[in-house]
Amino acid sequence: RKEVEQDPGPFNVPEGATVAFNCTYSNSASQSFFWYRQDCRKEPKLLMSVYSSGNEDGRFTAQLNRASQYISLLIRDSKLSDSATYLCVVNGGGGQNFVFGPGTRLSVLP
Amino acid sequence: SAVISQKPSRDICQRGTSLTIQCQVDSQVTMMFWYRQQPGQSLTLIATANQGSEATYESGFVIDKFPISRPNLTFSTLTVSNMSPEDSSIYLCSVVVAGGPSKTQYFGPGTRLLVL
Image (cartoon, rainbow over the protein chains, first blue to last red):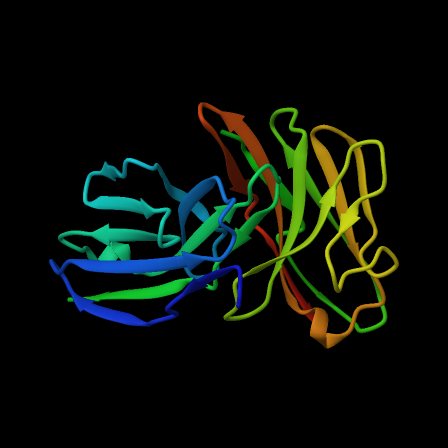
């Protein structure tokens, strides 16, 4: 089983739709969780950290379920500019290595 | 946060040659990494660049192929040696910055390498 797994997509949604991505991780000792966004031919950029209590940033909501070892990202009222690959990233317990998921491609269509 | 620059931004090289990629950070950081991202794939960690000691390589990557230097806390180089077309990829420098309750990882813009 891979350390971090994501549905690769692509998710094709119309503008204004709500879309959700899940990510599962295998290391129960993982301590930090993130969602990164990567545009085509660009480097990954931090979208948001994921806290145990869940957190929201505008149209984006991230949640963590430690018992089931998954994190989620919800995008409301999606925009054309949200089209990108969304990478789930997990930092192992005590380690400095960040493990990246394969990414989920999102295309928001007009 | 951290601002990272890489040089060159892209290159086209002949097989059998070597290319050295430079990474410069605008602040002193302890943790610095080199990743590879092949077309359509996610990121794969090549090695951790340790200041003042040899880099720590991940499984499948060796020092002879990917020698790394880290002379100080703001700079590192990655060399891709004896290149083959399979080395065509994006090479990304990354740093981890501690702040608040957790650490955050930042990436350089990447070096796009095409080996003919």
